[in-house]
Image (cartoon, rainbow, N blue to C red; front, top):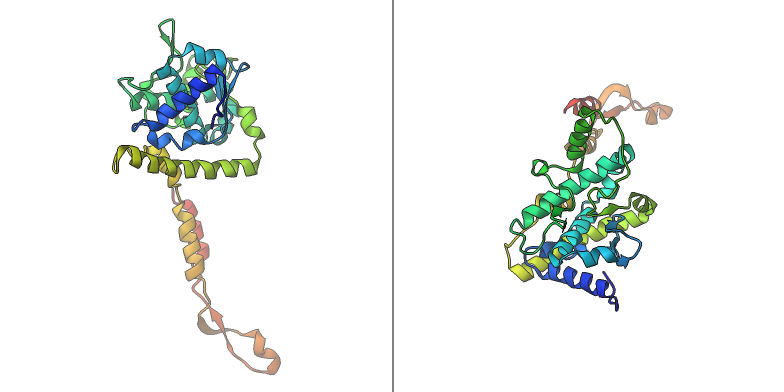
Length: 285
């Protein structure tokens, strides 16, 4: 969490974060906003995250209204929550620009839908124009789906695979993919545990602020708490443990353990369904 300091922008950022945490509409995100470190910097043009920590440009904070700053804070929080800079690394390796755009499109439409009347958060504007990317057609999509659409559209326009230099994509924020890459495996595992705990903490905070049954998790947060289990692996493990046991006697093969003593005993066999079932499981779509 942001440390208390004498800097005016730091105090303003801290105030906005606390306001979001206390808002019943966004209380479920309160725990997630404490994950990682937050700092104000003169070296950051807008806002930035490496997937764990947040950085906000000092001049950028000065230019934003309170609702706009709250929007940006939620934007960075959602990048961290959805693990964008770790999950979609391959997309960034393929095309920096489109990967950045896809991540932002996914988040911004969700934020717009959270507060359609802009009572608490609003997309930043400059000279009457919205800063950032938002498109209703991407509602309900994940980053890969949006990336594929943008890639196809780029190809149709004859732009090939050019990436461009505008990683900020509209000036709303920047994405520190290299910083995310530098985080070690232990740090990433720790971050996953912290995010999981923060989601659950946010649920508790929401119930305290808004009462039981209020709000609830959106689909993306629910999926983070309930990771998908591959039924094929579960079935394969079940068959291996229950159907491959040698529990039937058979004279088809003599038990070699007793041959040295001129004693002939049957061997134990089991129903061998593991091999053919494993083949069948791999063929199921």
